[in-house]
Length: 209
Image 1 (cartoon, rainbow, N blue to C red):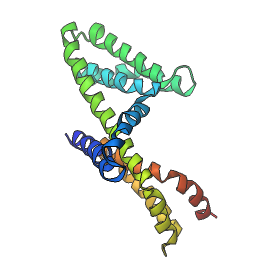
Image 2: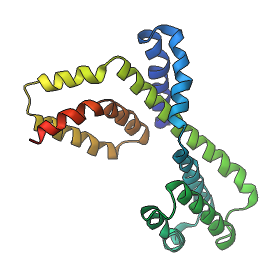
Image 3: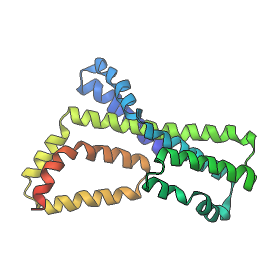
Image 4: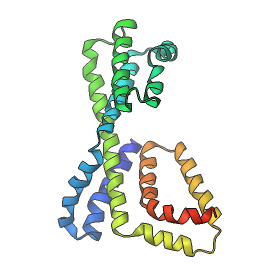
């Protein structure tokens, strides 16, 4: 529920209100589908619904205590395959989904064909939520960039009478803290940090001198 609320808030603030008040009104709404398309126009993102489908199959199959041992036996080679270039993350997701079907249909026999309708519906819901958050975060970042918020904030930071090491450590603490918050908030905050990436790339080297 929190992820849905954050995703809707980002879509509303970044997509509708931001463009309505800051980028010329309704005429700017034409940018929304363009940004949405560019956000999702990446073959690697095919791995997202595949990994979710795999988890839904295993969850529905209630494999329980044997999941870790059997998963290590069947799926343990997937990370190695990715690292060595044997197959891509997307291909690994497809292989993992296939193996999860084998495990639940033929090994544990806890998933039936009639269960696939519910599994697919849950997969679509979760995938749609994640993609909505991604689109909302990118729209929010687009508004920030158009308003030159990164440049303004970096100007304040560079002119502040504060040690650059403190700012540098503060950024890392924020990144560390992101690991303990829901995915939707992580996406929103990381997009904001990405907006500052070009300025940080030129500023941080001077911190380490």
